[in-house]
Image (cartoon, rainbow, N blue to C red):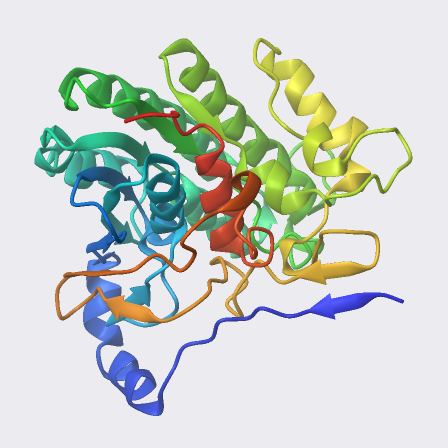
Length: 365
């Protein structure tokens, strides 16, 4: 019997919805929304505190459809809880995020402009994610086309992603506090994987036939992910392969002797051509929309909110948006974590991403 456990986190009150409508014009003009949050996991019996700094867009922000608040337990803060348990210390998670930001914006206006956050002597972990909005904007532009399809937007998104991922790693390597123990990037899952399985209004310039949006988008996302992980390998970083964790089941669906999510994972030293072939062809049949992430052959959880873009999350929200950022503290949800996994590690999108970040955590600060 198949068990479907839905974890959709939806925008909250009527008031928030009305306010969002009233402010839509201003938000559209800006096209981005700063959602900066600092949350400290305050562990009993210790006053030692270390810092985790996370730069990114709406994913790390914990965006939930509101212009006023964001998820308290987004992926970086989830990892902060793992660090707190591992190090028996308080962990301050500083999220400097900008919903709607493309890679260049995250790099220039978060990582570079707000470098002071990672320069604090308490900083031990620096992480970032980017490029999702480059891909989403290119996809929207493609879906608005008629006549002959123009792929220049997709090509630009890929080129910009590679440029700014490499630049961000180099900049953080040069500017973060020298005592940082872990630098880690999270790559892209594919939001709207099922929705993109549709025929285009435009026609391919070579075949003069309509394209399938998913077939066209997937290689671009995969190439972005390859270079995120490959640059990480080259520059002394770690890569959290969120694509594999979101898009592949946690069981062997095709009988090849490998758990799907593990088979999809980036392999250090693999060529771009081999990686792209492996994901877009050899193992393509194992890819699944993350709205139904199967943790076994009979049970699934919803990793994507009702907007079909942002990860689901557990718990409450914190102020982070048009009213400014916020800071606060609270006890960890779990006083201890057994075998490196909390009880809900695979039940929500943000929990899964936070756990994957934690796999690379150093054993000591």
